[in-house]
Image 1 (cartoon, rainbow, N blue to C red):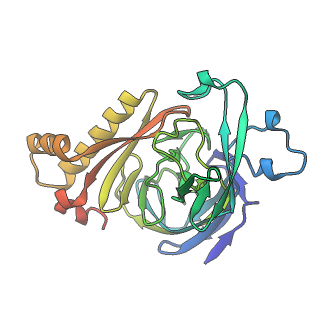
Image 2: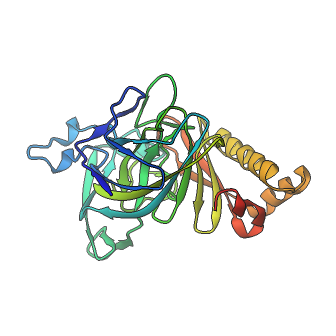
Image 3: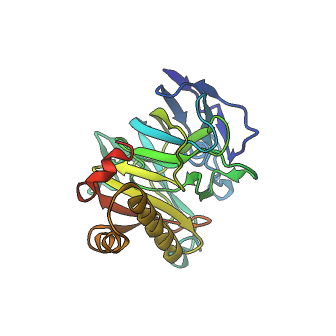
Length: 297
């Protein structure tokens, strides 16, 4: 298994980026990643007011068999995090920014699968990957942004045990990952998860001549369809339409029954509300859609 150092990092999903590694479909790769601030808060002489984040992502990884029109399947086999994470609180940012007068950071220890928020409050560690995506065709997209290629989705389901599908737009797919969180609530409502450095092991496979519209996640016995838009309403609506199109294409269920099933069994969930676009996902249990198990599993 190839191991890619955090020194091999990008801040834009760009088809002109040189690959950090070349792998074959079916292989696993280990990516070592800095936190979203480039580990700047842990450097000597760090000045909080001068630190910004640009989500350095390790990669890109070139998958030999990946061609435009295919789908990349990323299986998150494992994650490890550093023993200290950062929560950043920023004035005028996110839904709570109006209440914040000064930029503040909290450095929180991570011990024995717990985050020490205070001497009395400990949160369970739930690691996830904030930025995971492939490279789009055309103009480069900063790693702080998101879209159909993935990117800064900040989705809690992009976690160990998940399989995440992305549409391949350029030869090799050019996958990258970063912006790890040791724990983050749905919505990332205060603009920051517990930002942490770490590593992930990703198994990469290709579905030939088939393409999803945007990120699709198989996680914890459910199917989740993710979409990004300028508002949460639009993101929820688009994710719902994409789920409908999957069910309509890969099951024999009628349009009317699909609508009823989504209404009764699917849940709308927020990924994040604080980036350049909002992201949301619609989740439906695979047990309610057994025909979908042939879709990828």
